[in-house]
Length: 344
Image 1: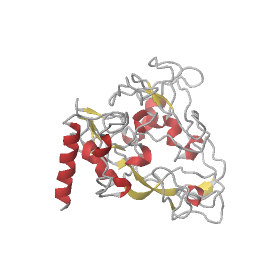
Image 2 (image 1 turned 90 degrees about the vertical axis):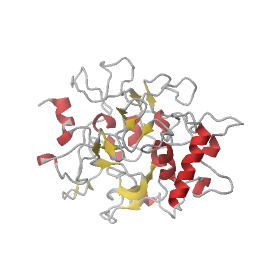
Image 3 (image 1 turned 135 degrees about the vertical axis):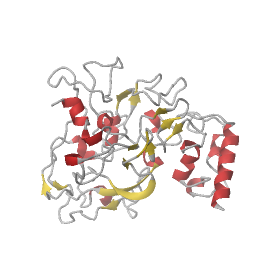
Image 4 (image 1 turned 180 degrees about the horizontal axis):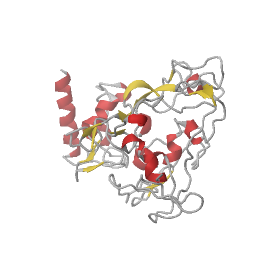
């Protein structure tokens, strides 16, 4: 029965899109009109098979176009391939990447996973989960049932360890489109991000053609060449808030065996070329001016990490580092991202 339903979904999707490959803020993702037929690609008014009137459960629905061999879109996120050219996607892959099995990924199946670096300065005993829990009613896209880490410190308000999150595709992406690069959700908090539009919302832009307003006609996405502009480093901290803090505001337990102590972190959203640092790297940077390698380029989360998944391997001193004990979405083997910049 499941196989039959899956085949039916594929058939419907291909019929609706006429064999064409959809792209961000095109096809089913935005650009709607009063006579749009895009709604029927994902929804049924009276015979839906999943909540939100969807024809399939969230992740499975997304993969009917964006999965391996599906053909509904050129972005195969399972294998991390832009199928139109065979080049690797910028975000990595959820199952394989560059022909090898991934060693760590963000979760998309709705299971609760630790959100490392989640809030540790909130006034709630259990940080984010103190408000965003099934009983609070304070839900927001993708995270309606955050859980409390098994190693939380309930006797230290504001110092509980990481919460757990049931991530799915729509935790990060808005399938209906919007102003952000790659359909990223706009509503994030805390509202202390570099770009606030309005406060509490993060605007993510790129140096692609039309990348300042990707929900407008004329936007030309580039899925294989890094063209980051501004906002992504701030966007990630909507969940991984403390990673913006060079020194933690309060001591906390990072589940690394050190207990409740002050934590120190690499600076983020800082210019690395010229001035004090004058570093060079092959890794992607945010380029606010859009003029290629220059003195305003800055380090951000995706300088070191992939968003979806990585195939890198860790050995020796780089292996089994607490608290994640895996490759932590890093771009290079054995945490080589450090050497790529600092060249010791």
